[in-house]
Image (tube, rainbow, N blue to C red; front, top):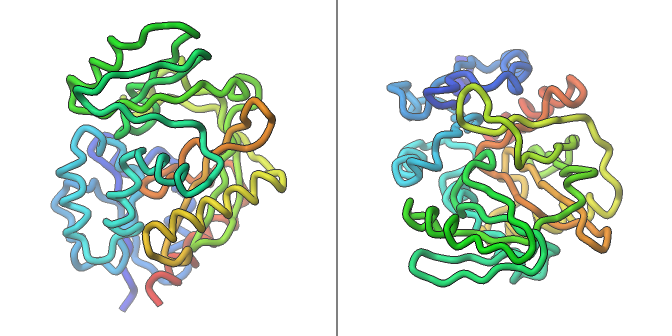
Length: 286
């Protein structure tokens, strides 16, 4: 009997945004019976061999419900434990404390005072997706109103100095499948971009990329540190996307580590990447 794989979207994007289109035939070619379903649908997730989070981009407003659903799915990738850790950007502070090169990050819980960098800075919710709720402020600006608005919605605010390299070179996303490097792509600046028709994320300018050695080295260190914090092996991550920017000194910094539902840039790389993804799914089930 063929193993079953369910790719998971949301009500607004029940079959994703198109980036995973090549994954369905790739999984089918390796013997899987594949379907799509929103995470909050009546699909039989419990009986599937692999339930793969791909476009669950409405989770931020329903995180408690989403995490409860994740914990109810026996064969979820990535695991519910990973999802719980990764859907709150406070993990960035944990990685900073572990000695990683991370964009400086301060967390401001509700009812706590905020202080702001003397340079351009960004304020966003610690739980969020697609840059929703993120705003950029000029040096010396008082962002208290934005912080208060995030607090009123129950969010912890996350404050970071803005990395000006994003304006010229954007971000670099390195994709790992089964803990092994697969490919990379670049992302243009998103702040100020228009919202996609789904209303769930800001439109991105994406292009293929070849990561330099220092970026690869940092991405490897980030994955090693994150899996150590989680107490798992890198191979236990079906997918990971490491988003890097250049700091003022030109060295790479971690902006985000995406382990829950990131676009993996299959449209920005060679067709064999989808086959590598399908092979990594089989590895998880071995």
